[in-house]
Image (tube, rainbow, N blue to C red; front, top):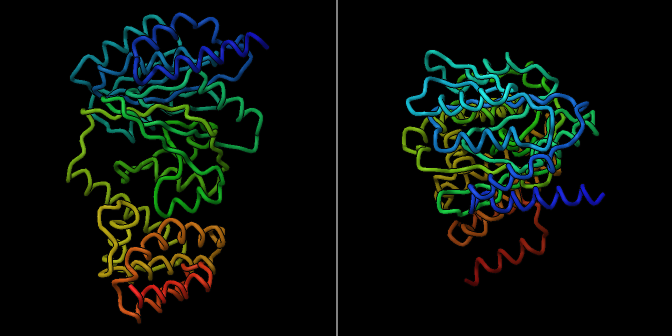
Length: 377
């Protein structure tokens, strides 16, 4: 028991330093490999699927954070598109030291979706973990997630919380809803779980594959499909460190590509609910609800209210989502915060219609107070 407590303390010390002092943390990790490693070769093999292109500044530590995991039985699959930096050479140096790495080099640029699907062909086990090779992970990430999966055979995918960090060591914590009903509901608005921070039963990815046509949102589309037939869980700890850096390009063109992918995902959800929206309605939903790059104000409030009502009314018929949880989610996260901003600036007719909205689950007394404030402010 003392040894277990000691290795957990070592792992937490390493993890706490990974962002602010990465080199020192990795040195400490390397010095404690034996103390951290589980002594149980009978544990199932875990494939770790990664794809990489031009990541020479980060790939070494990313590979080490996989190979140095406390979980003992790991097979790392790396698929590369032709790189123009030293990424391949760095990976090959690790291949020379570690026989449990499979390097697959594409001779021509394939793109992330084809790379993922190519990599699946080299995965050999019943479990596949994902990771990106410019990120870092907790020393016990695979141990903790695999223990949960092996202890809960009804679960097909286990994800985790994620901590985002940048070159100035600023961080942002990203948590995910553990309630699977809520995960399904959030697919109406955004990707519900961390893709790179997940471990999948191999049959999940092998049966679904990765699908072309959802550029920059391929993980979102994958979760949409997974949640239709498999069970998911969130391990409620920050086991994944997602690095943002200057090599990641965000521009107007990329935003347009993301918008097109989100429109495709939205159209699938709408089709499931038997909802038909005009193109301008779908664009308004994507821009305001999914991308948050268009504000909701008195000029479009009634349109947004109508769209949110559509989701609730059609789900009442189709019962794809838990209706009570759907109404609560929309009310607390979208309808109420916006209504409180716009109600003083709309007509009384629109105010009265808004209060009667299917999205409004507020009490009668609160509605009366809102009307009184409308006239007194």
